[in-house]
Image (cartoon, rainbow, N blue to C red):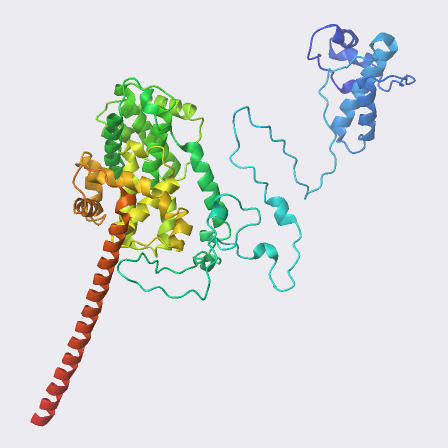
Length: 526
């Protein structure tokens, strides 16, 4: 049986395989010279690798396939023959045949062992959170008072995890006495008519898996921590020898046109601007390549955020063939290498705006105005290094103030994750931009359309009615007067609404009397 198995030539050349080459015949007929069943020599006390491999092979011969068993028998015969010829080569390893591991019975439910290499030096993993698989496989004890397992209880923003730290602890509401006396809403008092305790709006969404209310608190804490890793350098333009902040604003104003023409998502535009700023923070760019950088950033952002991204030929066409497709691809690769392929950790301000708008009851007017104010970061370089969460909260606060809602209660502070005092500086920069003469036509016209409720026109008129054009208002000083004005406007609106209701009720009563008189006249005629 063993004489029919051909012996391959050794894989490595050298003195280690000299005995194998000399012992192996050169043609097939002479293979019969090797004895079919050579009796093994007496084992010698040795610690060589061959002895260890032989003991392991004998232990698994019965479980191995027939072909593998025959190959190992032939290999053992050649090894024994070499040992008999030269005692000096008994510890030498014969690699004439590749060793095939014997098949061992495997458990069908056994989890494969995966070796994860450590990250390279200087690279941090996105999260150090452990896998949820062992948690799901762990048996959960039932609570004595509830029928559901503990792991299935709804954990929303009102039920903090035991190890929640940082922003989640800062959002905890303060204790308020239930027997506190009522405060008279006078015109000179800053009264917060919102509920004293913030309400958990996520508890009602526990049955909806799309809302992930069980993990919403963890998601908010993670996004607020990860946004700091994707902020560009606030002073990167000082390192650019040929660029200015005006060129950046002009580029982003043109990107707004392209973004509107392609009907892309708001997250795509914010991500494209963030990629451009981060790339310019690390690389020097000439003015003739600045547009190529912006187009590549918008292409990468659309591939990351959109379901169907525009083709490169569309970017080449919309730029009037300023660059070729090959230049676009080369710029895309260069940008990815410069950013170390890190595109996923940037949380858009739109995400935080949705969270704050939920606390505001999804009112359409404040939401649209806050979107416009948040996009000011695209053309205003003084807001480049502002975290997206702070940007969204300041935009919502200023939008509510401009619409006559001057209260920032505990509900809004909890879901926007910032108190009112923390928003004044960022909102002041937004207000200063609104008071400037209109410089970026594409940005202004985008939000002056009827589709966007003409919020840019309204915001500019509201600001110019209170400050002169080009001034730098101080919100810390002017805030009490603005809140008083908002309360007076709200009271006036409430009175007007009540007057309309009374007028409608009076018209309904007069109409019913007229109908009754007409019916009476008709009966009299009959």
